[in-house]
Image (cartoon, rainbow, N blue to C red; front, side, top):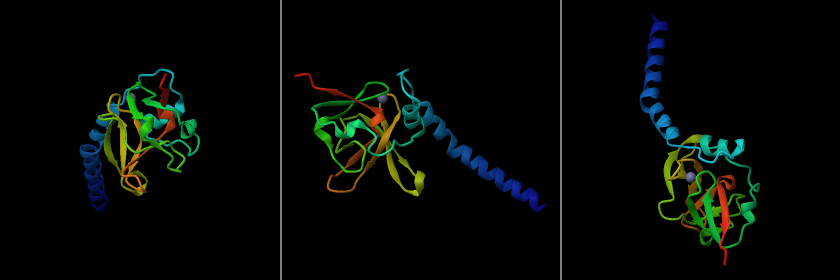
Length: 153
Ligand SMILES: [Zn+2]
């Protein structure tokens, strides 16, 4: 009898998870579309599974030219070089994105509340946005999700 009850609660738990969380997870992953066939496994892991690249691994940390940062998957224009700053975190950081470039969701992984942002056009993960330090906002980006196109002038 005890065993049955435990199974019953397990079942309730599972159906709770599938009713409330699974559709959201599926819905969210269904909105991510891989468009660029040349993406590496590491890029796909970040974009689809919300992994994070190693700090100081991206050459874009040291990019100081004028231009725009685009989505490495779909090519959408996301950040202006004017918003880029050296945050000292080891990830390319920006004070703001171009209007409408990203959508956000609350992320409770790693046991803390963070705001995840993803490309509004293709849905792939790009990073987390924080409100810390001197800047009002800090878009902490995975460099592997970005392509820099310098201004040609
Ligand atoms: Zn995109």
